[in-house]
Structures are given as C-alpha cells and as structure tokens.
Length: 247
Image (tube, rainbow, N blue to C red; front, side):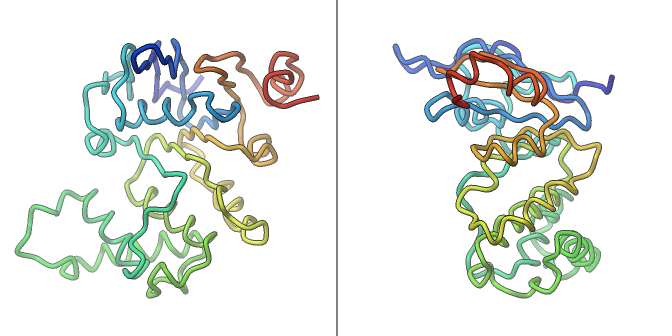
C-alpha cells in the first residue's frame, strides 16, 4: 500500500452547543482519489476548512506526511504541500492568466522577499507557467485577463494555480459548482489527467463526477462519518441511500 500522506484524526468542531463535525477520521495515501459527500449541512466544508487550516478544530489533529500540522496556518500548510481550491472562484479579474500562474510559482519558489527584482527577471517562471496552462488546454488564453474567460475556463485557471504550488495533497471544493454543462467536459478531462501520484480529496454534489473520479468515498451526515468504502459499496449501502442518495 502507498504511504499515507494525509491523516485526519478525530476532528471535532463545535460552536457552543452546535456540533458541526464529530470525531471525523480519514486517510489519504499517495495517488488516492477520495470523495467526501453528504447532504447540505453535513459539515463537509467545515471539515475541509479544518484540514486546510482556515478553521481551527475544537479537538483532533491533522497530519501531513506524518508531521502534525494542526497548529500551522493555511499558508504554512500550502508550503508543505497541502493545497486547496475553493467552491467560489477567487481569481483577479483584470490580471492576465499567465501572470497569475507566474505569481503562484513566484510564491512557491520563495522569491517574494527579493523585492528589488521584478517577476519578469525570472523567465523560467514564465516558461513553467505556460507549460502548466498548455497542459490544461489554456495556452491560447495565457495573455487574457480572467474576466474574458468562460466560467469553466476560470475553474481551470484555479486548477492551474493549485498545480503551480506543487501539491502533495489537493483538496477540491466542488470544482464543478456553477460550471455550465457545455463547459464541464474540459474540466472533467483535466481532473482525470491529474498526476497519478497526487493525493486528491474532492467535495462534490455531482454524483456522476464522484463515481467517475473517486476510488473511495466517505459519507458525512450531521457532522459524522456514516459510511466509507468503494463507490460500489456506497451505492449499495442502505444507510447512505436513505440519508443521501435516495432510492
């Protein structure tokens, strides 16, 4: 079995008497494709917020490659290889696509402290950024501001930014949210083509995508894990069918 790269141990989050996540544990190995599903209000986004570092857990811990990162900020976790995309696009609308990817590479390369040098002084960054965009089918859009892109293409740019950070674990928060049906095929193809060694945790309501991409599924309801297993296991689970999938 591949080495575990992400381990979540007994994560619990409550706000006063409101329990949002309850004793959640899960693991991702190198190359894993794990989907987190559940009804609205199940605690999925709160769980991913705790894993990525935007929300501190009430108890429990997060481990990246056997190191406890629970006390680290989101930025510190990113530098260690734990990268997240968001449900709502957060791109700079007026900035060229390639320049946004270059800035992500600039940050990853720890060059931001060299304030006396321009990003244009690093031509290899531009080459790497163009290569990432080419791989995602966005090469011809490199000089465009993101506001000119179709929404599905904007989601691809977010994926490009994530890949520029060289993740070991990638958290995808509803990558298909808001993407029109006619634009979804390119994004699906990009997700299918993610590096095979990358560990991916995906939150998604699109069950076609979940059953296409995931090798394992964890089902959350009322903040707790109610089932986990292969897609076939989850489809056949009567508890899951009753709580989420329906008959």
